[in-house]
Image (cartoon, rainbow, N blue to C red; front, side, top):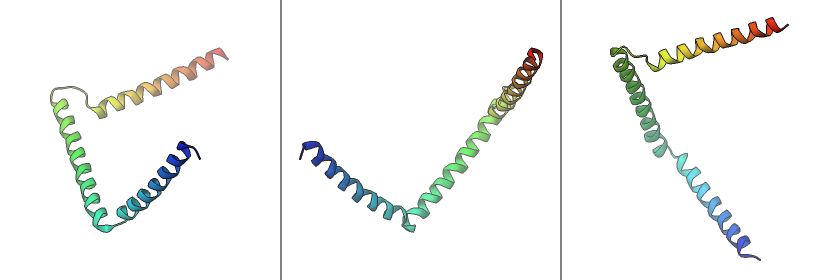
Length: 91
């Protein structure tokens, strides 16, 4: 048996054992409850940060992320219409 085969068997055994341990850990309500609360808090903080950034840039008269996304959507619609018209002209 080669060194690689021995290493591979050892790695597979380690991976199986750690996967089972983490799976059991992540099913434990004592872990899931605080992790869920932390994720919820992080999501609320991110939303508050996004709103604050939009207000800040808007107060300076600059476009916000939402404004930029709206303009990009309109540009894509215009490009699509232009391509359609170009195809009609070719026909």
